Image 1 (cartoon, one colour):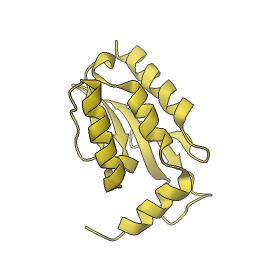
Image 2 (cartoon, helix red, strand yellow):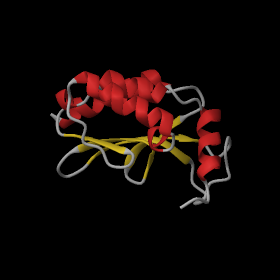
Image 3 (tube, helix red, strand yellow):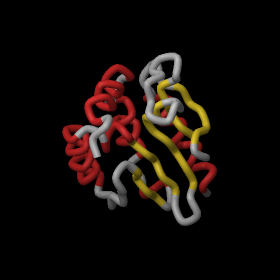
Image 4 (spheres, rainbow, N blue to C red):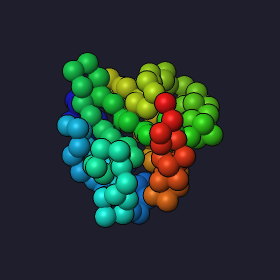
Length: 131
């Protein structure tokens, strides 16, 4: 069950991923990052994580750092999620789901596509150093 769900979400992310991001494994998750060659000024000297996909013990998660870091996109995401009729189970940046039918996959694709690399770097730099 989880394999097919993870593959479907990963495929959607890859289809919508703006140019300049790179898929890798970071922190034990499939991660979509800005390579250090593009942006080396990160706080931990690792590529800057834009999004991630993970299978946890009790659920799967999609981490959307662009939604968490941008109040306008956060509002858009919450409102758009409501229109899907699905229940949103979200932490600060992670959308949790137990099965693929619980997740509006096309909305995840839209959320990924919304933030080009330059815009994400600008968002990161505007909040860097803030608590």
